[in-house]
Length: 125
Image 1 (cartoon, rainbow, N blue to C red):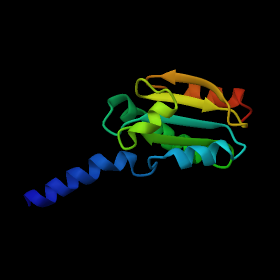
Image 2: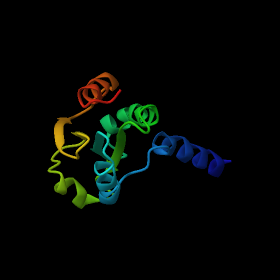
Image 3: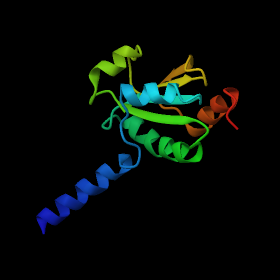
């Protein structure tokens, strides 16, 4: 019984991130070359603000599929990638325009509406 409860607890705690896998340098480069605006969220699975953003990012990734890219990168899984993008704190969100050029960044928890507003400014309909 104890084993079943332990497995159930592990399953429930890991399910918050199951739908939006961690990206890598290849994922980011492919998104930036896609001709679509892109949000890359640099965080960690155990970071509390990152955990709070997970369902927001998952929902936006589905909502904007085909119109914009939403990528989560776990900097603790790939510790070099944060340095490539000058990430000093997590979570850090970096927005890129359709040409792959950085158009803005934010450090800390970022709610749904500011992300939507930024996508609108980048021309996402």
